[in-house]
Length: 233
Ligand code: MN
Image (cartoon, rainbow, N blue to C red; front, side, top):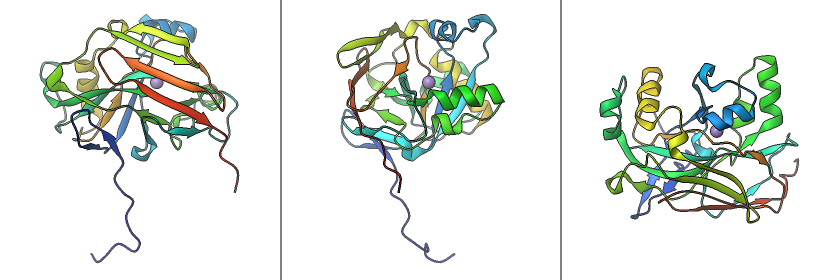
């Protein structure tokens, strides 16, 4: 096959609490997984189907990083989420075996260009440009699942010290085993995959200079600032 014609990009990675780095393979996301968030978008949780979408692996951003305000949006939103890190490959995984595929858990932020998402929804178009842009997936350190599988606990986000999102993992409509089972009927899950599991209500706009803190009970707190916009070049 020969050599690469130019050097390959480095593998994106996320810190692990106990040391080492988790190499990111794919980033899957779940939409509409908290009843209160579905209602804030004016939808009926009973009739809302699970939505899956993806972000590129190199959208992962380290805890503490400054995130440039992205281009082509005037409505850049935060979405605090529990992130599941997959440690063992599988497809067609049964819910009862799903947790055996989990390496660990982290707090993440599914950053969203809400105006582009609304336009895509209105036109029946894909969500990629609204969700899968540069720096759109900050993730705090992963806590290995040997320390437990969170099913209850506070999930929250504050902007400049003001609480915007405040809910509980118990409010998820589809729990982690069922998300893994369903996703593994669509894709072969691989070690290195991350799954963002949906956000509770309280999503809202960000601006340059904002300081974000977000967390899931028991996991490392995710802290990021929003930097000035990326300049056109
Ligand atoms: Mn989300």
